[in-house]
Image (cartoon, rainbow, N blue to C red; front, top):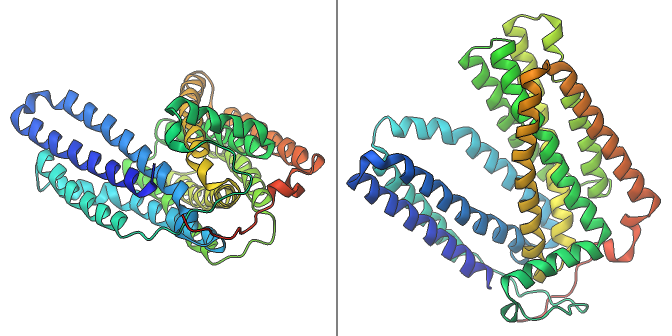
Length: 360
């Protein structure tokens, strides 16, 4: 389907979901729990349609040499929104009821809808090697299967998607373990914890701005994996305060710095590799690749949460962080060794080119 149409339908679905929630809450306020659960499911579905389609559309909206800057700034603004949204949301929620809150959100969704309508898509790039049947002749399952077949035939892409999933799995150690360490073990106050948590979004914002002005000297895949090694080191040293006996103030400063660095490094992991994939994957395959990539990652995150949740219940944090960081570091070195030995980054099919645009 045309990308603009999918994004418009996703925004309309989001707006309708919010409107129906507002009406349902007004009529049956006692049933707020199932109403909220239903709304969250609807918003998650429509957001997945929107985000996957937007990611697959960037090559039609911007030139190839602009993608790194666009992705970097996109991450920065997303991080800024992550930082500001709870603050603004909490303030607005003290002034209005939740059904009115939903109506206000519809207004912002409609503003986004206008922005989508005004997007200017370039003509689709037609790949000479394109042998896939027209999208309209495929079922949803055939469409999904063709993306899996593409990954199986492209070893480099399979490695990138697999490593992305692994990052989400190992990052669960931080998502689960750091709050447990800060609140339960180190006894930081709510304010101190909030400040350390906000530092992560600040780091992502700064990283996105910094990367938008940089020109990478190394291959983007190599850049991402070198920064993944830095993330492994960050995970390894996360549990250090548990054995040092520092004051709450010093622990707060330590995690402010660590989380800012963490957010910055994540930008340098995700953005170069995402940009490279957008440049390399044929336009007609991008939605089919990014969708299973996101699905696999989302499946592994709750698995990682369960595993590390159980571990932190029975083992102190320090050794868990060390072992997790060392495993991630070893895995990253192994992947870099495979890429180097098989010369995957030097294969002609894995080199980014800028094909001529052909009119649809």
